[in-house]
Length: 95
Image (cartoon, rainbow, N blue to C red; front, side, top):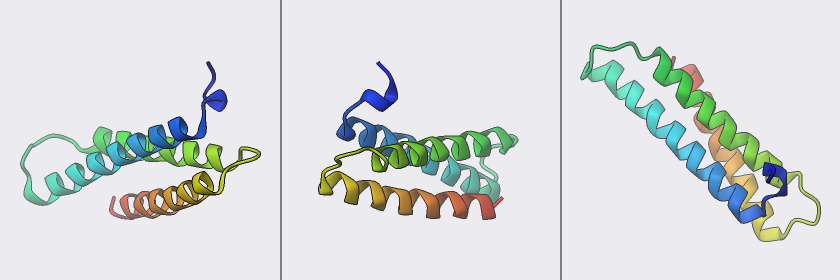
């Protein structure tokens, strides 16, 4: 089954999971850069973080572009887009 055929709650749940995982990985990368817990390169972790946040953002946009969308899902999608955009910009500027 294609991702575009999924119902809105499933897509929003997946967008949230991708987004929160990306935010957590980005936070771990920043904390490791400050406290030097692990002496490992943080480039791959930053890349995975940004990729997961972009995937979550694109899923939220996909929900918003669907036709005949209930108001509840439209509001949730808009809020998720705002939060993930701000988080993505924060992690891009913190590099």
